Length: 142
Image 1 (cartoon, rainbow, N blue to C red):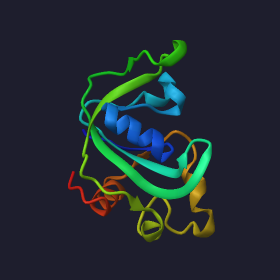
Image 2 (cartoon, one colour):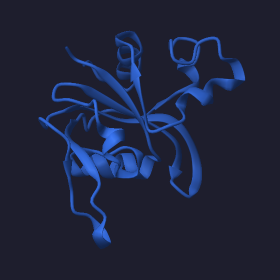
Image 3 (cartoon, rainbow, N blue to C red):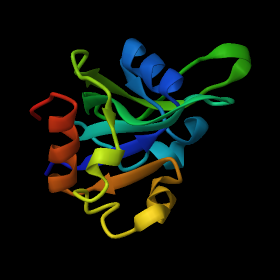
């Protein structure tokens, strides 16, 4: 059974994952990436351009399908070993602003000005309907 996930990361980090062919959540914690399995799909929501701020984005920025059988630890800079999964990203996907989707997504519908509260944390499981709506807004047919 395919599951659909939403990761939350700044756009700069989401693009780095896309360009490197991986997904990493919760600053590389194994617990954050657990539950993602081969064949699942992941879309990233990016509130801002950079982790330290920058331009407000509030858009779904990258989308792809998980290809690795299990999470693994990667070697990064200065002894940092984040947990990741490999992802085949749809490189032709376009960023999709969330605001036009707020009343359509089960995740945010009816929350009014408090919609952002459900986007906190490193990941959320999405319904098939929400994922399909987001993917189509990005120009992708999953």
